Image (cartoon, rainbow, N blue to C red; front, side, top):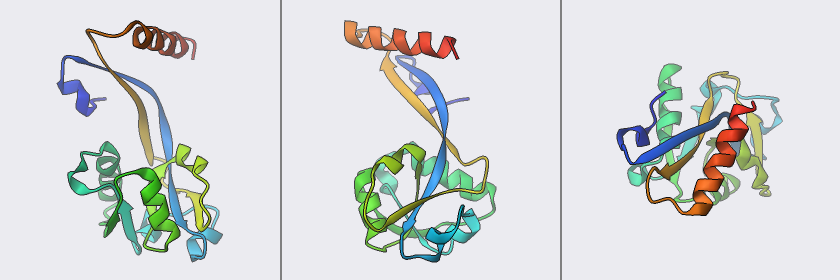
Length: 151
C-alpha cells in the first residue's frame, strides 16, 4: 500500500498496524445510546475534522471511506489538534471520525462508538529519515522492526 511519504525517497515508512476508526459523538445524542454507528447515520451530522489545508492523511482516509459508501459528509467546524476536535464534539458542534486510540482522551460530553463498516481503519505509521538518523531513532526503528517480525 502506498502512503504519501512513499513519494519521498528520503523517508522510510513503517506500517505498525491498521487501527479501527471510531465515531466520537456528543453523549446526549441518540448515537451515543447505540452499540455501533453507521456512516449513513453519521452523515446526518456535521463532520468535525482537521482543516482542509492541513495535509491530514486522516481527512483523506475519512473522505475515501464516505465515498466508498456513496455518502457525502456534512461539513462542520475544524480543529488543528485532535483534542480541539474532541472538544468541539463535546460542545455539540458535530461528530468526528477518529482512530480508536483517541478514546484515551476521555472528555465529558463525548461518547465513542465503533463504526459498523469493517473497512473503517487507518494505518498507524512511523516515518523517519532514511539517512542522518540519530542513534536513538535508529535504535527505536530497530525495536519496531524486530517487534513486527515477531508478529
